[in-house]
Length: 87
Image (cartoon, rainbow, N blue to C red; front, side):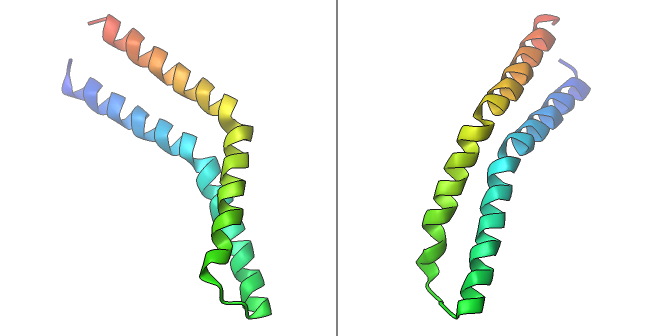
């Protein structure tokens, strides 16, 4: 295995990780921002108020994007096996 191939595999792995994690991270960030705006508008400064909605939204996003994430991970894994099989 050449160093270029190893770097290419590592780059694809990082891209896949970021792509798979993005929907959950973005949904958590958006719901956190919405709740923070509501807390600022109502002057309710409860720190634990954001945890439950974030957890629920992240799990719902995972359920919604789960098949897509599995497809991306499957394609990546098959690509790795095919690449390594040529050596």
